[in-house]
Length: 112
Figure 1 (cartoon, rainbow, N blue to C red):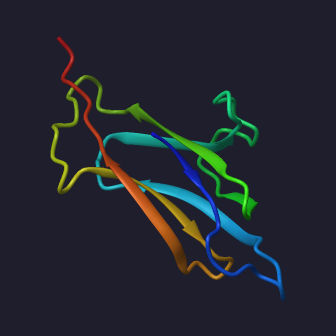
Figure 2: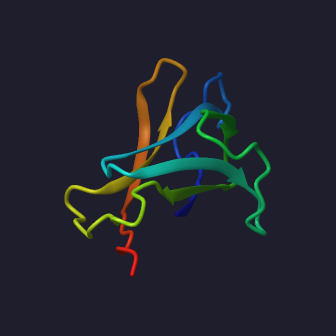
């Protein structure tokens, strides 16, 4: 999953459009290991890939993020169930309040 983010609201300081943001990912799908990072326009991670929050500043210039889901089901797969099995990318303030959330369905076919 990849997405971009831009701040269309008020920033953290007087007159600033920049906001300090904590980016995390989570899933409802049992059997998926998630790792994420901030990426550049060529889709290269510019922050460490992992499961730790990404702390960044989002302003008027778009920032890009990627989430990678790794199958941990030993071939059992994750059935397509978009209402209940999703990956969420969350943009929060330092206190943990959501600024924004985006999501996508997850599917891992069963091994042959």
